[in-house]
Image (cartoon, rainbow, N blue to C red):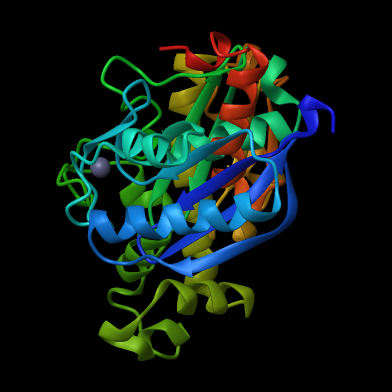
Length: 324
Ligand SMILES: [Zn+2]
């Protein structure tokens, strides 16, 4: 087997499940495996070692890339910032724990950063000046690729795009505790908050959403919009504006070649409408040649990106992939 074709194991460690697979040339090799995330750092590390051993029994493996929630120091491979999804995870020396037991080259990366890297490598966007991945889910995540390498920032918290401010009215509290973050408007939760504002003073005759009261969910709003409900459609239109406003701020700081849009909310986004709304709010020099692409890798982006970071490090493009 050509050395370039030897796969790395990619692992995406989430709050509820671990997704793992072999990766070569920014693509999955074979089927990924999925197991529930056990509780506590020791049990998680044991589960990861078991997954790695299973792959190693049948395949030659070049290394291991792990994408995890939380703030990661990718040099030491330790988790330095906590996350509500993985209690007790902060302070875990993950890279050492895995590398010492497996003797495989190991890289640990923040999950949003890993996903951005995976998407850019798979789509051949790593030769761009700047690509920004925006994940629209229950929150907003992001990752920034500058000249082929991840931009991690001075405190390893670069690319936390969900917390840029899009208002100074202190109207919506973000999950981070601050006010009026982009995430409080441009996420699934943000869409729901917008719909709740819009139904105030309306009757059931004006919108089916009024009947739901306190039980209203993001999916109710999306269903209502799809069925032509006026308030549902207004909420979804406003959602597109909220997404465009945050992207416009990113445009004026980074002048990107492109955005890649992913996440559970992305399938409800009309990319042509988003592009128009973005152009209305952005300097023409930036917006005219700006591309917006949908995600190619979906839920596998994090594990593919983490594994590809290892493959690229072994192949000698490590200096590019460690922009800081
Ligand atoms: Zn925030």
